Image (tube, rainbow, N blue to C red; front, side):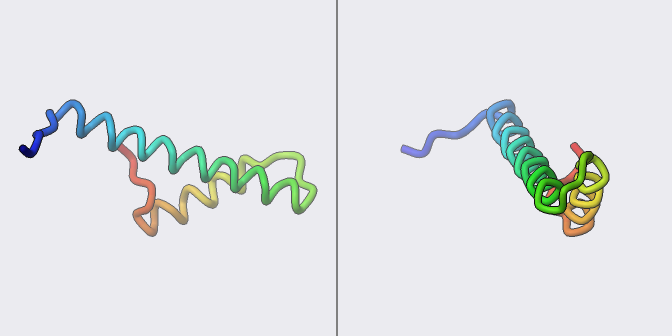
Length: 61
């Protein structure tokens, strides 16, 4: 039989997916900074977040 998820479970899963996407963006920003010998990856992270937001990959919850 099909088990229905509660709203809380669905929200938790979506928050976990969102958090995972943010961690992947952070890893990408660090990798790009290291590849280009940058000391600070914060601007790269912001650029990736903006691009992801524009593409609606990462949404503000």
